[in-house]
Image (tube, rainbow, N blue to C red; front, side):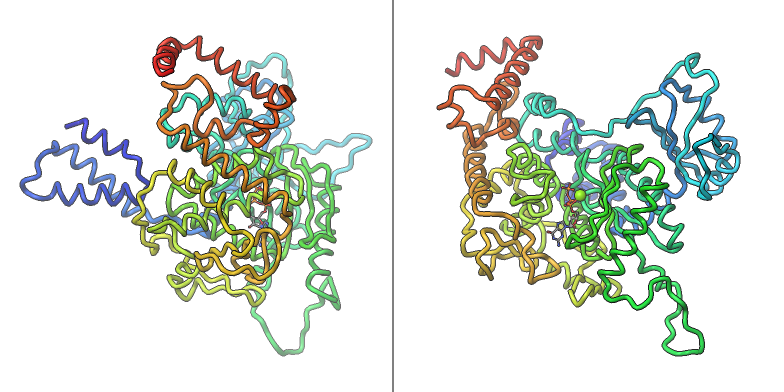
Length: 577
Ligand code: GTP
Ligand code: MG
């Protein structure tokens, strides 16, 4: 009977599917004749269900609020290489209780310390000393980024464990995937390896909070919030940190008066346009970060871009940051993706595989150009999942129909209304496994009529293409815009070609596992560099990419000979051939 309960926990169901299954099991157990499970096992199953039913899923703004508050109680410390963890914590505890801490490496050892109260930070700041060298001059700004000086650093023994903040090497990812049991297992393994860790998310919010401290020196009520893949559930270790400078709260706090004797004198007078004001504000903050921002280097003010921004490296956290302002639609897009990513575990699993595949095949790049972006690819995954029968996720219009009054949102005349409460969205009836979906994704887009149809997640249906761009993905909120207008014909052709080839590889590899293959199989085979050049590489007989693949295969084979299972694997293969 224990085996039956074990089966429940191993069912490859999405959270909703699992909840439905547990629900029917509980109903079954409550019938008098169904005493097949031991009472305590039944209680455990029902308790899990109760937990799932009573744990309300957080809305995007609840999640952001909670994380921001956590970040405001946290500090960043640059530490010497050898640091006695217990002594450090004991010392910091003098200023208040510590609720969480971790260490990481980025241009040296750093620690994030979360106090239970904000006041502890003020106490630490008051107790910190300000260096006064001949070439240093203190500025009147108390930061939450500290530097720890130890009297005898070489005498210290280090006992800290560092949390990993960067994504593993591709070769290691492929090795991990080769050891998986099935393609489904590979897809979930890839997501687990690449997704942002709890510590990485905390560090992202803390970095925004530290930059907010600096911006608040000019604009005291401003907030800086992360958006994009840092918060939309699709972020991968090493992705950039998109920051949104929100000045709107300033207006909200003051009661709007249309008449009266007193007019407030504004710092920026006679603003010619909102864009001009955004450029000026970002210019001022960029200057401030460049001159005084602790840990901020390579500050670039890219103010003439379509969406003006300040780009910089936050050396202490290791993040490449893009600070924008007046960009509320992008924040709404992040919320929409958060909802889709939280609805069904298959959405993220599929998006991680597709995004990683696209990166490995150089279909996407960190440099802007005529290629697809991760954002476009994610929208394509969402569209594909809306198109399944039955759909895995609902259309944006369906999410709009579920919205209540407080969800109403119009930004620059664009309707950005959709439901924020995840519990109001009915779980999907679709039971397809994620490996089937991946293969179908490639087949679907390998044969999509890009020449006449556009991708539209608002309707969840393809529409006639309104212009002649090679690929048209309607912007979900600014509906007259194409988010993939930058993509040229040859990039689209490469995408289609690779999608077909990948669908073919997955079908050919069907049923393979680590037990039956000594070469990369399933998803691992798709992540090998340069699938498209396979035929070309064969003709050429050599080349950089084929060398890289060869080395990788050799290292995997070498690993597998160390493994006692390798003999079994070889036997299986020779009997098959
Ligand atoms: P990464 O590649 O992991 O950084 O993914 P990302 O989703 O963070 O993409 P990126 O940093 O390029 O952009 C940040 C956010 O800006 C996205 O998540 C979207 O919300 C928004 N965004 C990016 N590109 C576009 C676009 O072409 N149109 C619109 N409307 N929004 C975009
Ligand atoms: Mg980003």
